[in-house]
Length: 131
Image (cartoon, rainbow, N blue to C red):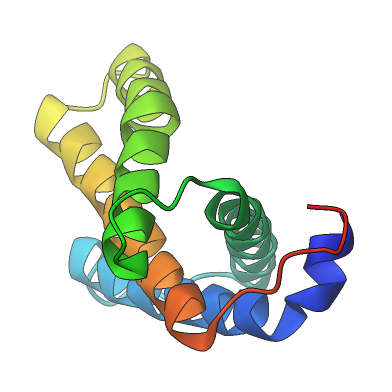
């Protein structure tokens, strides 16, 4: 995971932007509530981990379209459709949450991933020497 050290600044910026997107989602869905410290800390760790894995995927993704932003968007959509949507929809529906809420949460994570990917693509990611 050498790429994490090489790309810590873009990953941290992407984490911060993901947290900002999450604040909008949180306050729109739960008016007047404030997240507790443990929830905020867990969210920050999860956003950092998501940005770290996304950075690795962006570094390894094929550059077929010639436009790094389009390549990043395709990578995000593949990750979102392949991992996030199925997990959220199945888990939230199992817990009895309505379909629209599960869909809204899935959309939230698409926006987070897209914002993070565009930020890291804009800043630039450094490939480890062995790649």
